[in-house]
Image (cartoon, rainbow over all chains, first blue to last red; front, side):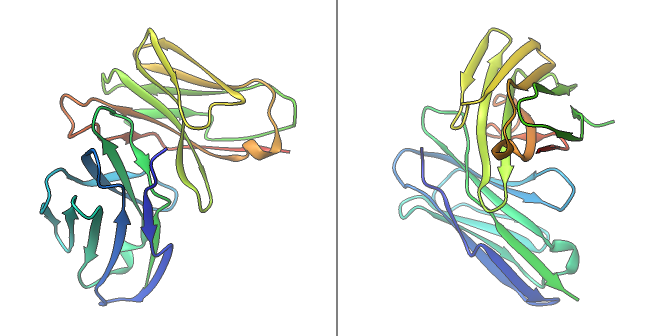
Length: 112
Length: 115
């Protein structure tokens, strides 16, 4: 079982703050990493797939970076809004397996 | 219409009862998965199936069984439910060939409570 760690476990920020959180994973045999956004009472939905060392992906105010050599990915949210409140999950795919291993998630609450 | 549906959405049952959770999909994906989510523990894989004739155990398969009745249907059974199987259960599908490195598409979840 791969060890995929997310930190912090939860985060409270004020509207307008920028924030970031981390997904750490074993660097050996990396294949791909997904970030998912999971809003309360909804299903997780994919935000990004990261595949190459140095990848940077962006969708609106949300962006992600990847460092496969040191085994981490950052998710950044610029100017947080209440609608960004959700749990953000990362999921690792290692070479040879199509089965994702999920981290425990970071719960973000943005206060108006 | 939802691409991945789960029934029931909520279920309360008693210890020792047999329970079946059903998942259907219209995405045409071959791969289907069952996960459970417990507070603070993230999503853990119970079983997965890469096609109708393929069934594989995941990280936490003990106490569960599955049936892949068709490409579109994947059912999860709890043969004799116990309270520590109280959790939120998600079905998911994927198609590595077309959707970005095995991106998971999740159903709405089934909240199961075992008393």
